[in-house]
Image (cartoon, rainbow, N blue to C red; front, side):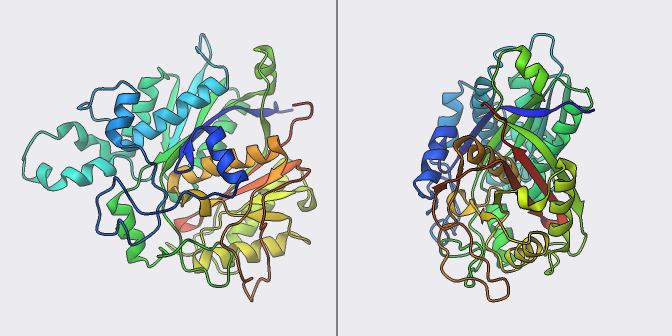
Length: 401
């Protein structure tokens, strides 16, 4: 019998604020953090709402007491900040003889800095060579590993918007199979002009606040952030007298390969990944009380995800998208929303889906409209990505915690 795997610590930094409490406070008061850009320089700064973290890169460097010209990008700095909280929350002040690994996720890597100096680098103007290698997503991972002295296992996952959900999945398997004692899993992404221009070219960004699952939805709002969970075996957590937060009871990745940027409108990929995650958890659909949906507010995703939920659940449980609070944080989204899912279990609550007015005619599904305390035993967290790379995680309440 495979050991029970638990989340023993969490840490995050999103536009809602630095740390778990700031994020929960905003969610519970139904307060979003979307607005114009203050730090990223782009012609679109005031054109769209963004989930920008209101701390400059230089301030992040100073708060972490890191040298300015050592190639630390905003992506890495956000990751380090979030991971500090996760380790403290897990009570891991030192690793001693533990086998500790990190599975980090990012999509933009150091693009946030490289794009600033791109033409200077090409023309050999100034010395920005410390940033030239940061375009490799693995650079960010190794910055985190070096900062926290993690050496046993270090790897990077970049599967677009399902990246950090897949990181959590891989970390869970590594711990379950005994390869690691502790898996540090999550992701970090900073806002970049590259990302904004790309999504704008796809006509996937809304100029107003996004409306997940609404009939008049018109695209997503982009955000930035970092989030990490600490994963270990339940027995090991107990041996060090630490109280776990939730168990990771089910997970699945399913690639439908339908289209490069669009999901199957019937929701086949979303249906299969949720169904198989339930089977992994040995749960029936009716045992899920809350779904933290992928819910990007794009025309295709919300239709596809709604169709999948209707097909799988005889009665669709409470569901909502929390991207209307933080913006879509890309590679970090899976971990951000995994933490929100664990919060739902710990606080016995469900989060509101903001800006909803009219049900989609095809689906006629109404998401959770208000923050409420409810009895929650099992939460599903969905992360669906370009290329049909779908991931679903299930977190379960641990009794007496």
